[in-house]
Amino acid sequence: MQKHLKHSGSFGLMCVIAGAAAVCACGGSDSSDENGGSGGSEAKTFFETKVFDSMSATCKECHATGKSGAPVFLGNNADISYTAIEGFPGLISTPSVSPIMQKGIHSGPALTSTQEDLIKKWLALEVTERKLGADPGVPKNLRAAFKAFGNCMDYARWVELKLQTIAATNTDDNQGQCTSCHNQGLASFWASGGTLVAQNQKQADDNAMMFLKLRKFPYVQRLVVGRVNGEGSFDGIESARRMLDKGTEAQQAQANTHPRFALSSELANNLQTFVTETISNVAANRCQNAQLPDGGPDADPDLYAPP
Image (cartoon, rainbow, N blue to C red; front, top):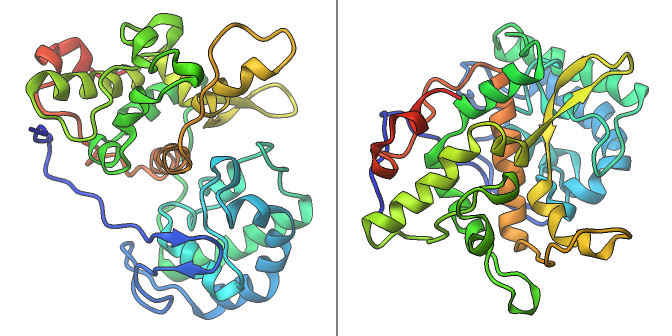
């Protein structure tokens, strides 16, 4: 039996984007959003005429297809893409908060200076039209960023995205599931549970344990890592991609002996979505309703304490 969750807040339904061409809109581009503003008008026109072609040239390969676990928010044309971006929490926000601007170099290229200028102008228009709040700032160092990310992780969203099943991922050549080595935190990764729908208290506790452990150092590093700027100063956090890339290390020269594995495309996409959403929620101060598992493994107060 799946456990109840703490707190009363709930997440709104996100749009489901199938490939590059099909987008289910969470409200039209002219409707009011949850922040009280409305999309469209000058901001939407600027995106469609100035931003889309520029972004699409370097971003569409991954963000229209989900390649390498990238979140999908671009489509075949500007209108579809705008609707998808509206439905993806946090992308439309102040430039210093939006993941579009803050991603930096990742599995794809960083934005060019021209792209940055266009996107900044577009987001500034969106912030004005939607009456979005001012930039809340970012954590000042990596320790604070890890803590803020862990505090903002939401168990309801984790379960909705089926991320509790990552622990049951099988390795190649029948060398066992992730839980066979990591169920007690070996090698700075905690993987316990793995059951899609918990049938008893132990299964529910094991599922919850992985989530609770990943909120805290050192395990949180499997979700996010720090980023520095050109001067070597702390510049925020981004997806670690550790769970996605670890399974292919055996193919690299001088690799360790970790068995090969691959997350399903669904789980890979969902994991990236969860991390991106949580980083965005931290930056925009939207963590007040983040939920924890109810009661937890043996109701251990240390697990429920802030990271």
